[in-house]
Length: 584
Image (cartoon, rainbow, N blue to C red; front, side, top):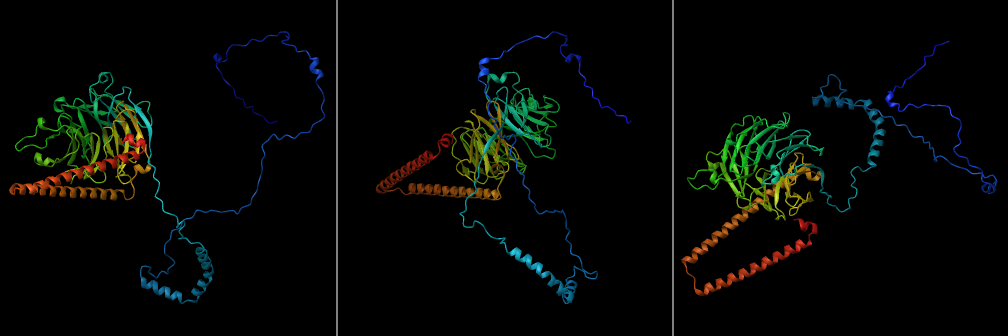
């Protein structure tokens, strides 16, 4: 008799998990309740005739069968090379190939082979001609312009526990980019002295609850920059004018720092990396009127310095007493020896470091705004154009036109805090203001109004920094909140001809400004010649009376034209939507 092995499995459990031990014992039966029959209810009972009913307790189902032709698929590949030629025929020699073809075509078997293939070829030709492959459908429909939806939505919010204003935002240069945010009070506040108010955070864009890393300088940080080659290195420009280098792998404290005796005397207002072979050089600007160049490997003293003095009289030397305070900087690797500098007095200076004298270094400057230039950036389309913001306006300038901006936008309702070009879409730029709004402009789609407008926060916005791929935009506020915004595809990626069209727009506006400038000079020259002629030849009283009458008529016509333009603008503003009218 065969042996059978019994399969067993034992369950193990600790004694403490059994609970209280049950104790069983024999007890006599006990009646808990007794229900006696009710005679009145029994009299109401009556018998019914048998009833037949059908009950369907399952869902109805149906089955269908169909026989289809079986399709057999095979994956095959083909390598088409010309072959089948006799060995003595060289396919590269056209004469040999032509002679062989004539010899084959005169053969009797060639005619029979062609005739046998002709029915099959005719079948395929008729099958191909049955369908018009090049027929144009819906040719009579009216052409409509494509519908473009401009959408900006909020992805995430990163909040500072101390509610400090955001002073700088930077993206790390890595595959999964992170946000490096610094916080600083531009004006003294009692909250600026509380413990922990100097920390800067490195946020993971997918997690808003807690920063991934933090750095703690000994004073508040006004500017922050990420290394283009090493994402773990951060450069901090502090409010006491010094520069600190942080490595998030080493901890929260700085690994190197500059001395207060060799640094700026006032808070650092701008900090940018410059193009170098080792990617370790950067330069800073401050409201003390100096720009310093540094190497993060040795911060004991700056590599070079430049005093931002313009409009010097002959024989006057550049000094801190006549220097312009730096409010913003812009550097582009396409122009390694030049950079743009925005000042506290509203000037934009085009600096050329290759100049031998100070006047050659300060190559040119523009009077951009009545107040401080809060931001200046070169256009990614052409480096000759740049955008500036300050006070209540945003203007686009050209290096070839010194008198006025080539593109002027309408004044904003609130003060403009920052401006930035879209990294990939050449015709777009974004603006944030102190009213809490984000404006997104596109010169090729709408020239006089933004294509999209979003109320980001009830607090004032301070900074806007887009990611290099153009889809994400980081916006900072005065209450320490950093908003991560995502723009739609047609606002991030360029069109096929956007760069060419934008270059043509810049050239057209530059020519217009040149023509206006030349015409204005002609008018001034003509007026000056008329004044000199009147001084040399005194006019008669009759002619002078006529001139007075003409002047009065000119003034009256100018006044009528002015009020006509004002009324037209008021009507346009009334036609706008209430939301747009309250925002712009």
